[in-house]
Image (spheres, rainbow, N blue to C red):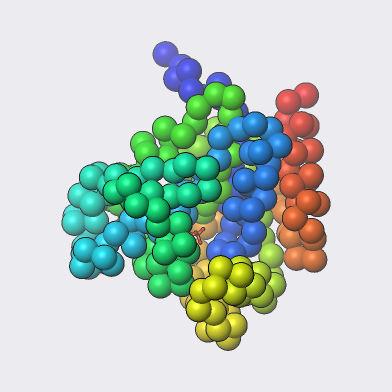
Length: 224
Ligand code: DC
């Protein structure tokens, strides 16, 4: 029997850290009236919970138990852990680094599959991450691999952190991004990679609106 959820359209946007894929994905979702899933926020919240509870970041069994018992809720642009808003806390560089580390654990990634797929609800879903098109939603209508140069991404992340009043140091962010890119790309479990059916969108020097319009056009093309 065909799973009825597979008829619900998915636009999967994958790419490296700070590429702007989250901003683009959220705006595409808004334009289409679709749901939006920031899958990185799941990894970040889990990593944040592990740091808070003293769970070692390489203890796959304990992290998987934590993932299965996680009281995680998304509401508009806020993320709640055990009923407490953690949106800003999970955006810290520390939480991002920890997320990238736990994301290398295959058992943990499998434990998070059902949680992510549950976001596929009518009328559709726009999602961003590293393996949305390759592993979580391989039958997505539109797959986008969104990139930008590492220098431009570092500048964007720096600006974002400053605007939020968080700690930010440009050379350190650049180094962190390079390390995170290497870890996200080199890992054996669902590495960051462009699948053959994903369209490449290089946003270096592009405005957010241009990127959003491009994805909307690709979605429109996929309908005809
Ligand atoms: O997109 P982000 O920077 O918020 O993601 C944080 C980390 O989570 C990233 O370094 C790798 C991991 N991640 C992943 O492995 N798979 C996803 N689908 C999303 C994020």
